[in-house]
Image (cartoon, rainbow, N blue to C red; front, side, top):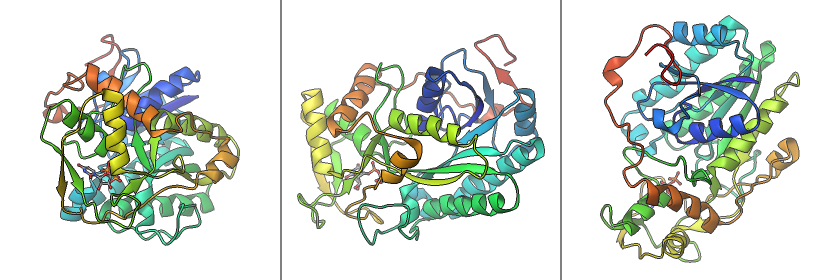
Length: 351
Ligand code: UDP
């Protein structure tokens, strides 16, 4: 399939691009490179720098590249920042997506895989979290994802619009061959921060609360390997070939691991001590979150390859230990936004 990957230079998107290529598909990436990295994509991947809200650019690309399906990863994802600046999140995650959807409508592209999040559920009433759990997000970020979920269903009721909403739990790990990995700025996620602390790159790792009602007092999360998420996208795209496909699927391993267990895993994998300090609880952190992935298994035949936290951490360690500075493309590109669709292809296209 010819796939437009919106936000394809970001962490999850770039790993999915590699999975798509491995499965014989043809991804075309559009990314504004505000958070993504050109270096996360192989040079021969067709690449456009642009914003999803720029309907004329997206329309041109959908048309010129004869796109059949869109996978949409582009979003601001910092929960705390979304509380501080909700408008920024609604403008990007909601308004931006509306324009993307409008461009799809204008060009007759009717298949979408949308990256959603377990944050749409808010504080869980029961565990594991299946698709029937009520969705009451507690942050503007979570709400922005839920708003799009709701809209997609409305669209599918009135036209032949097919979608798969994939709600990730904690995306983690890196490509098995060590070629690409996680490089956020700022980094807020536990596994890369624990690895950075082990490498003595930064300060000691802050453990946000050790008095939760969990076996060791620290929060538990469901860490799912980024390549397993990629494989779910491939399977979901296949499903979209069937008319009336409307999928809402929770993607996690289905096992909770605590902050303490993550630190132990990083120490075992790296052979280094992770310096830690106990800190206050972080606002909005539920004690335990983990998925019931059985619907994704039934509908997509999705089985995770990475069942154990240590294996996931090992892939993250491989990337971070060999790329201590992350991707080496940290330039200010925000001043160089194009107004027309500009394809950057392996140095051969227009730049
Ligand atoms: N966490 C922590 N110290 C950090 C970052 C995260 O103790 O520096 C904890 C956080 O409170 C949560 C878990 O690690 O319980 C996973 O956090 P992360 O930000 O990686 O993902 P989230 O679950 O918030 O999406």
